[in-house]
Length: 110
Image (cartoon, rainbow, N blue to C red; front, side):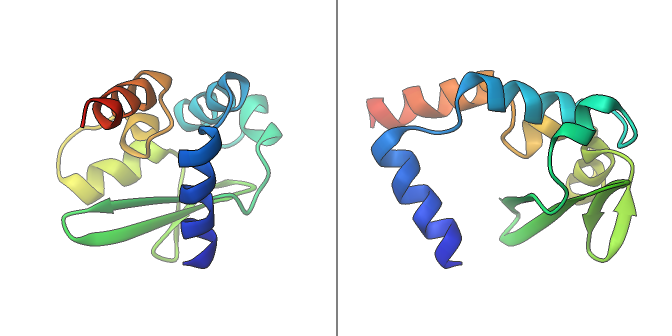
């Protein structure tokens, strides 16, 4: 939890991921775990999303995505289980650049 808070403080002070990192994360979420683009993202990276009052933690593994002690081939499959509807996995977990821009615009307007 401290890491998450530290990241959030740094993100507000200095901004989030750079465009290259966002593209890499987005590509990883769209492709199967065996795809070469996913292999560039290090195993052990943790994605966190609060949804429906529950915190969902997904860990990137060498051969997929680990959520609730089960491995899935895509982030979209996990997002569908969590929400009950079809979602784009990278967008659901906040990895899409368009979503990050929209969130930034809402925060500056508030």
